[in-house]
Image (cartoon, rainbow over all chains, first blue to last red; front, side, top):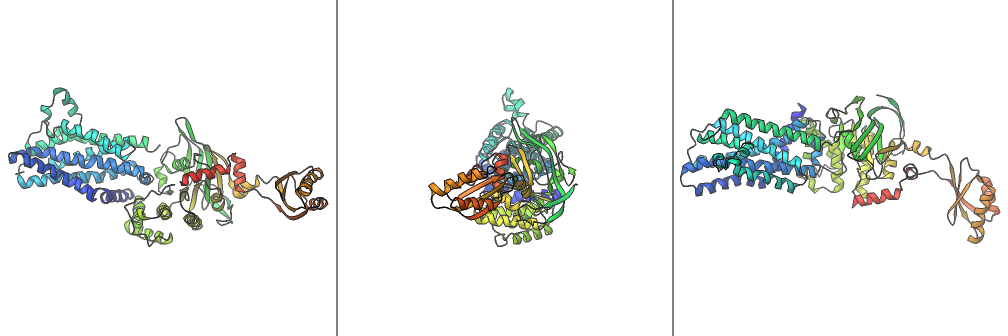
Length: 244
Length: 346
């Protein structure tokens, strides 16, 4: 019980002090809105919006979570306030779930901005909403845990930002967001399937446009495995690097 | 848990004998970082109700020892016990009973003083109503009630340090670790914090304190450990540490004499001739210091001085200070420690 009191307090503090700050709201909510608007203006028919929606949703989550978490944790490590959390009688796994919880919720909120915008201009009937919500949750979790992985690897806030982009920008092109994986050069395709976002985008495409290349029963477990793997690997690195 | 009698050394905390219980024990604690041994076989106990001080220069291993004891670092070897139970392998079991105040204030800039305390209490599983009550009480106790609603970033260094100490005790730990609590803050704030530590201790908080400041250790601590190069070179109460270096008697004479070329020099020579068992030093023009392995009788000295035409205006026995004891035991000049702490302030 005491662990959950701490869990709730950490998530609430992070949401208040980091994620719900005006600059982050503008980055997390206005940025996907602007992307959506840009695609809307250049699209020729309403159908295009529906085709672009999975990519924009995935990109909003990716950009809303990875660098935010990496930056906030690196910042707390630099100011030594993270030590306060390590000194609390909370198991490390629960502590890191609390630290990542705020970012996951924030990533999910980001994802619904383009969906809301799209709902005004195209007919989204026929969408498999449980699959959309499930994939948004898992994309937010894997992207956040990628941010956690980055924060363990760096020391400075600027390194966290740089390192985040090192992962994020290639993923925009390799994970089928706007260029289908099948349209990529053959030698790049295996790389696509090594990235978790590919599976998340594929679920979104299947749920919104029936265009997925993998069955849901494959994509969901793979995405779940990526989330668990990244989290456990980061925990292992934290134990090795931060508890010396 | 072993019991013994604890006697305060300095007189600043209560100078009374009282039965105490062992709260914390370190057994042959070792921490190696690749080729560097930061803590080298440290063994000591901290007793309930005492202020136990770690005194040593920069890089001596003070902070590393605290990190080991509080679970922020893993020992290479050795054991740690809290109230007789080992927690070496599972420090999380003990962390709920410990309060830690690092050498830099590490609360959250965006949160107010009240919110910081309330958040820290939540980390220890304390419910909402209880943590609000405790936060209010601590703000009042630490004289921060008026600043309680202001963001932490607006606090002065001294206020920040006070709030960090309050955050360290909000969950009512069995032992409070204070790492260099007065380093880097102004003199007035440092005085306030020392008084606060004494007051906390009077109310029953057991304190493990690290410091550069010899005077601080002397004034605050019931027992002191000297740590140099990761090794504990001496542990004891102030009295015990002093006693070891009071084997010899040192008597200082203040002397008025007619002229340097007559009185002073002649008196030194005369004392050396007449009292071959004493070592005679002359620290300045008007003082003589006599050192002996046994007691020194004053009357023959006064006679000898009178015969040399000098008048003894004052005679006093010199007791070694903690600073002198530290220098003798560790071989580290106290001036070096002063330089280090001035550097750290900057």
